[in-house]
Length: 335
Image (cartoon, rainbow, N blue to C red; front, top):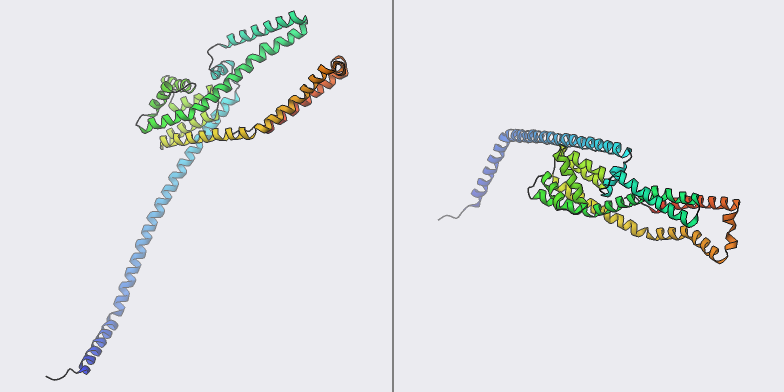
């Protein structure tokens, strides 16, 4: 058997390479043409896909713009209505409702008049001075009932703010469980705590006489004039007009109200030092005057017996009042 000749193998390899080169040279143009065609096809498909994405993005932006405009219109309308309502001064009957009292304005005026007359009669008997008795009748007969009414309104509003976030959380759970909004409001009006229960019961009664839920919630601000109530009415109105996840919106409102309450408590704690300083500075002239009168009455009696002393007292009271108002404006913060 003859040996294997490597020359034949090398010759075969050369022939194969030559044939491959000739085939590549013959079909090179066709291969490049196919590559360019495929590249153009991919570009066209990518362009069509980009056009579809751009169109979808444009549609989404248009829908968001329409919704944003609807929300802005709703907010402007609600703000305008609220300004119209707050522009008109609250009547005594409305203030009695805000305080949670069941008496009539006539009964309030009669009670104030009786209190003023009684205090004036006691002052007249003790001092025998009609002018002093008249000076006691007016503040007690007119000013004291209004002050008490304002105090009751503020106290009821504070209790309402303490309970409102809990009521909103209960509404969120009711809506998530499948109850409609009016049933959730009715649940708060039945199971909630005062004064939230009575306010939501008024909303239910307003629905029964034909008002819609947004209108009934907006009406709540008449008997409970608080910014938090306006927030709640705005959320309900926006959800009714623009739609959306109601439970999420009410839950976010509950978180906002809790954060507002925390911020108010923080501001109150930080301003207590300034308030104490203002109280001490404001009471210092009266305390010093009382001590001087107790120790040496003749030294300070000229302020009450001489006309120049009367003028000095009047000017001092005016400037003292201006100082107290300025300190009050500096240490009171609205959240």
